[in-house]
Amino acid sequence: MRKKDARVDAYIDKAAPFARPILKQLRKLVHAGCADAQETIKWGMPHFDYEGLLCGMAAFKNHCAFWFWNRALVLGEDSERGMAQFGRLRSVEDLPSEKRLIGYVRKAAALNESGVKPAARSKPRSKSPPKIPDYFKAALGKNAKARKTFENFSPSEQKEYIQWLTEAKRDETRKQRLNTSIAWLAQGKPRNWKYMPAWNKAGK
Image (cartoon, rainbow, N blue to C red):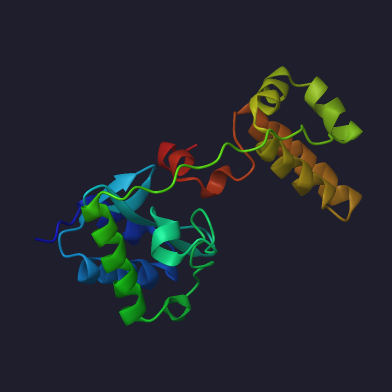
């Protein structure tokens, strides 16, 4: 028996207009492939459970994403990791055919039924801290809260801010981004906080 969750309805209703048809189509096809899949919200995003985590979907500012938890066995070892297993979905036409996607869902459900678990992730290599531009160091030195947030971020999170600053082509743009970066960091925000459901839900 299909299990729907009103929170998923609310998530779809709040998504951007371009995203709603994509999310509705994904939802329909997941249930077509696994009638007993149960909907839920995990980490602020819709997920489907069947004998464990089955798959998930999300809407962002300019694209949607869909992924299987047992990615390697469902799609193959060469498939993309993380949320972008089917690329950046901007319209229903970007999705695989209904037959193909339903087949993936059935395969994922069968794997969960048999008790096959996703392969354990190998321990990532430790990343060296990114090089911080002098003007960014100086600005961080004048704001203790911003500096503490930045220092507590992972190297990849720090790099997101640094790339945003260094990619500015004009001095005026870089200064504006620098001021914005310090303000966001003082509030504890990562660079892409606007696209993170947890921050949006909190209304920050």
